[in-house]
Every structure is written in structure tokens, then in C-alpha cells.
Length: 235
Image 1 (tube, rainbow, N blue to C red):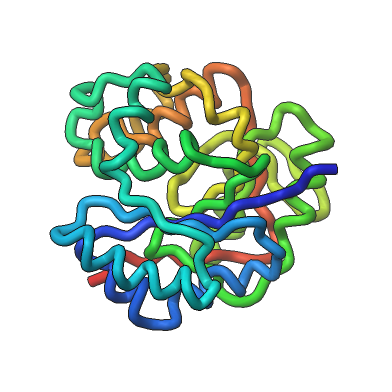
Image 2 (image 1 turned 90 degrees about the horizontal axis):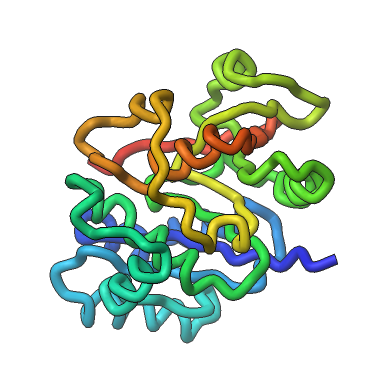
């Protein structure tokens, strides 16, 4: 069974140094304890793409990264592929375009995405269990660990649960494991009243669009009950 997974994250002007000049990226990858087919970095909205690419290239040379992508290079292609008008983001473009480009360019069956300010709290074997669950239940389109140790809240949001996962609605761009084929489609122009809970400053951003699509079509996510990632904005 094909369980090839790409690990990916993105960086921008305010965090690329932390990601590329410290051990953080290596830790982000290793904590998942999974043999990723590829490890990718998407460079988005930086002042000097050549400088950031230079340091990303060093991580390709030492084997930590498979490759890196300057998001602007493929942004137009990705928007055309998904049928999205750039103006429709209403301020959410830079919160969305790296994720869309990464899905557009993906080569593996699955993608595991972390935002640069999200990291597992420690080493965690969760991906194999999530893949098994996703492959056994066609309703499930997204998997993630619990966020910020909020186990009680995750349980409260769940429609059902089993010994390993809470099952329910919702989507976050902080961390998601997805099947590429489900998301490499024209699914990003839907709306749902429940999706209006996302921050107004983000406009019509990627995670809001995904949440609307999932709710409209009764697609579910699973949240791993026995481990958490930590999301903390860089200050």
C-alpha cells in the first residue's frame, strides 16, 4: 500500500532565520518518527529570496531537506489550477498561497504540513495510525495531533471517538495530514456559515476555505488523542 508522505513547512521574513539557522526544522521533522519520502520548504513573502534560498540550499546539501521552493515562482500557476481569483482572498493571500502551491506541486500520496510556529511537544508515533484510519474510512480527509494539549476541547468538538482518535469537523493550517488527491482539486471556492469563526484579519484564507468545503460535503478530520503539537506565535 502506498503510504509515501511528504513533510513540508513554510517560512517568511520574520521566521526564516529561526527555521534555517537553528536546529528547529530538524527537530520538527524528527519528532514525527516517520520515514518521509520528501522533506520540503516553501519560502514565502521574504525580502531577499536569494538569501533565504542560499541557506535553504545548505540544508538540501546536508540532506535535511529534499528541496525548497520559492512560492512566488508557482503562485500564478497554482491559482489558475485551483480556479481561485487572487482578489478573493480579501487580505488572506499570504496566509494561503504557500499551502496552495505545495498541494499543487505535491508528488506523494500524502502531505504532512506544519506551520513554522507549530511543533510536536515531543517525539510521537502518530502518522501510521492516522494513515490506517484515513484509509479505512472514506469520510476522513484530514488528520492531526491534538493542539496545545487541549484534549478536553478536542473531545468536546468530536462527533465520535475510538481508542486513538477523536472524529469530527474542523480544519487548521497549523498542522494537517492530508491525501493529496483530495485537495489537489477545485474545492477552494465554497462557503459555510460555520467557517466564519476564523479570524477576520485572515480574510478568505486557505484554512477557512478548506473548512467550508469539508462541512459542505460532510468530510471529517481525526485528532490523535495521545499526543499534542504546540502552536506559539513567534514574538
